[in-house]
Image (cartoon, rainbow, N blue to C red):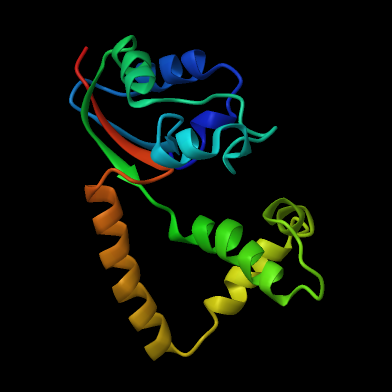
Length: 164
């Protein structure tokens, strides 16, 4: 489940249904925003993952507790840095600030971006020639693995095994 659980009103009930469908020995793999991440702590209520569409926030501790309560044993939790989100919600506003005719704040740059613009920007970036994309992916993987190793990421990937 990639970026699903934070949108579910009753995460506990949802995980309970997953647990009933999973047999012992099966795995549940999910990704959710990490409320105790470096970026969440640094940006607090201005953290880009804070939004009306997110009704649940999890830390490593709370996701482990939730899964354990339904018969899962967490095998691993890995910090995840979504480069797409970084490009769409950090780089794009920075470019808008630099291109602005008058000086604008980061907040104004963020609010001047409509809902479709981040995806359009990402689509434009990824429609480059294949050789450029291969270079981008190469450096992306290095950066992703480094940030994950340093536990710097806005999301976490959780692998849990059904034990009971």
